[in-house]
Length: 140
Image (cartoon, rainbow, N blue to C red; front, side, top):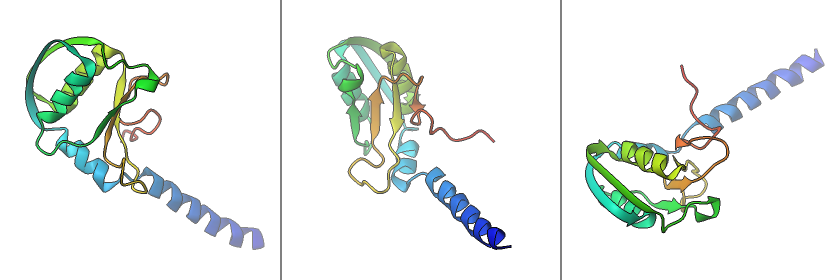
C-alpha cells in the first residue's frame, strides 16, 4: 500500500513534466506562423549569408536567425535560387537542400534571447525541417 501511495504521485509528476516539455513556446508558435508568409526571391551566385539575410528581409517582422558556422555551413558558398510566391518555410527547405543542411525554430521559453529564432546548421542526426532533430511533434 505504501508503495502504491508513492508510485501514483510520482507517475503523475513525471506525466506532467513530459507534457510541459512537449509544449512549444509562444514565440516559437508565432515564428512558425510568420514562416507561412509568401515571398518572391531570386539569387544568382550570391553568398549563403546574403541569401539567408535577403530571405528574412523579405518578411514582415522577420524573426531572428543564426547560421551555425561551427556545424559546417560556410557563409561564402555561392547559391543560385529562384522562388515565386512560396512560403518562407518552403524557401528555407529548398535552400537547405542545396546546402545539405537543416533549419529549426528554437523553442526555449526560459531564454528570451533565442526563443522563437531560426537556426540553420548541419546535423548528423538527419534533415531538420522546422524542428530540432529528435524533438519533432509526434504524428497523430
